Length: 161
Image (cartoon, rainbow, N blue to C red; front, side, top):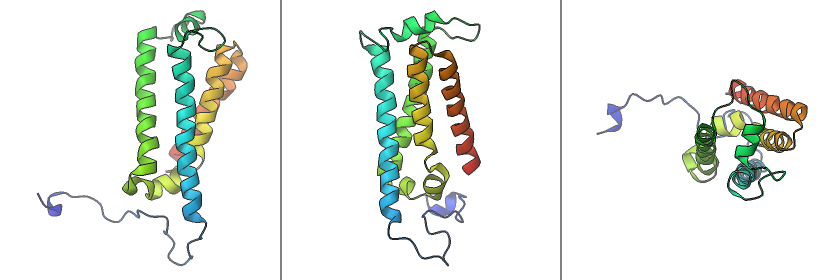
């Protein structure tokens, strides 16, 4: 197979320098590396919190993940196994993003990552962490505010694309 066999668009910019008239800031590569590292760190913190809540004996607020789920039953609350599967898919997807944006050269320099993501993933991770902990402590209004914050960050990510 040759490159001609694939009809891929070639007019997408793949690096930061989209304005040829502006010189690149010398601090830009450093800031990009910092943002990439912060994305990875925020993923690790949120994943660690989930793993502690799900698989440790103490959980968060001395409640296991299953006990938290059973504490607030609603018509929309999935069963525990479904919840673990859903969060598994979410964290796997976030993990692929966190690794790719840091180590895959084609991804880390792509314009959608550099300018499209910006600080929104870090903010979404922070909101997700506070939402989960506040929910575990029964602070339902606070957890709603931060869950809404996760939604706002997700919409912000979509809008930046």
